[in-house]
Length: 114
Figure: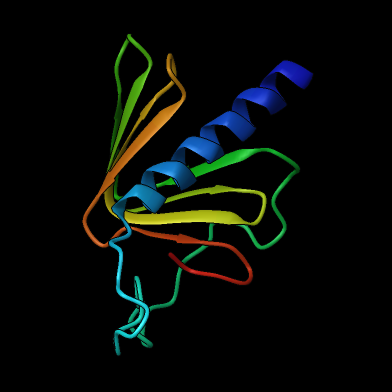
């Protein structure tokens, strides 16, 4: 079980790192916040009481190929513990434990949205 937890934590680290790279740098005196989320946006979760380290995925449509790549299309939600990724579409590569997401991508925890 330890091996799966390590993979899950690595997977979530890759998501967070990838999204942090998308954040553009704003000068300190700028009037504009970095990565402002519209006030009307409510990040959606799959479970309000997720099992520890379980990965939940939900979308309008999805495909899984034999190489271990999953493609999720439309209203995509990926959740692990308190971390939730919302996007229009996402791809998960089980071989490399990487995720790519497109369109209105929001990474959320209880305290922050990126």
